[in-house]
Image 1 (cartoon, one colour):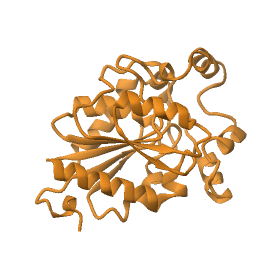
Image 2 (spheres, one colour):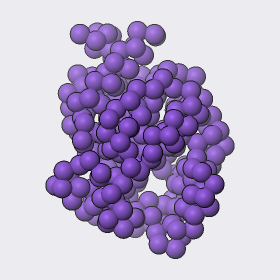
Image 3 (tube, one colour):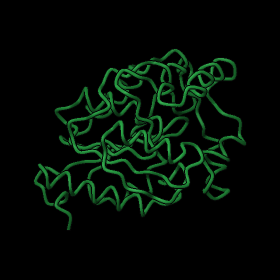
Image 4 (spheres, one colour):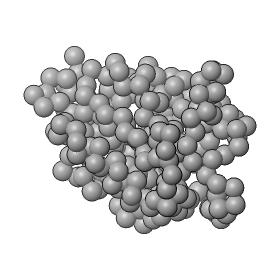
Length: 245
């Protein structure tokens, strides 16, 4: 049995999903962790998402920190996917008394003082905000299927497309105040067949985080396509975090 399960006050896992998604995406990974877990939602999920377009990056972070404050597990590992990496850095810095580990799953990690868009090469850095302002933050259906859903079943891809929620532009363009180099153990799960965030770019993200890297041969949503393998990586990381305390 992992040491993380033997602690009198076990470490919990807090899951942060990526853009357009929701907390349910983590269920297959989380339900067999044998540790406390909390899958958080961004604001604007559910039938009424009016006003989400006006929210800042900090508004998103405050919304999620309230979910953590209402959870009775003291110490936690943040598991952040994609856009969630940006939010996770801020949350880790602002809740440093509780966050003891950081696992980035195909996550975007900007340099200290940067934004989501600043983490990309110059051409994308210029085009992304422009495209968002012109066409919104929900990609066309075929782009979602080719990028996010590249190795999912048709049924899984249909569900992602149906449930995709546009985000505020500011969550992509606001700068992160926190350092990308956290003073806690960190893991980067590199997704070897990711069509949304290519492996070479993921290497750069992991370098900015200063994280240990584990490779998983999956597309951008391993919590759906490879839940068992991802769970095992997170359990091993959790055990190492617990052992180091």
